[in-house]
Image (tube, rainbow, N blue to C red; front, side):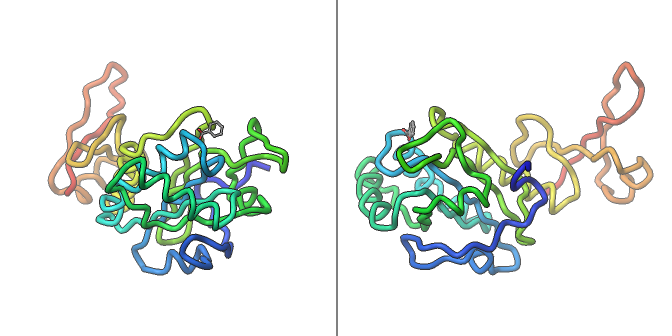
Length: 221
Ligand code: BEZ
């Protein structure tokens, strides 16, 4: 079984969190809400502490994009609350204002496809550093899967949100290393004739040896 992946509806789980009970679909209640749901192997661990502090530092940027942050790990709520004091002391000014859900039975991490097959403690498998960007339709748009040994880059998470939201808004795709404001590409299923009406601002077709004209760039707001 491949587990939760792009295009699947995020399971409507209800879990305790540092902000009280959270039901994931209710958390995504606004018509334009996105959620970034991210797991970490364990509380009071070094890489996780740097990651959650970094995420707290980016909270305002996510909010500007209509994105709610939602952490999860297999430690309990009291442990999360105690750990948040360390996280905020490590990066003064980065307040952890987003909720962290508790999954002490490790059932939710299975349903969310966030289990690390290589990391175990006495109670079984730990969560991986998984992250799902979930859209307003409650479907997974993009997932990251990092092992315990590699901390995530929050600038890349933000860039991935920008790419997903730009693609959805304009029915385009974004090229390698794309950043907001740069040219986007017109997807292969769109004919040149359709592209002329969809993109009245025009587009440039890269002149490639194959002559196939499939690499077309345009600008969107
Ligand atoms: C960490 O967050 O530092 C970590 C957690 C589990 C295994 C290795 C590192």
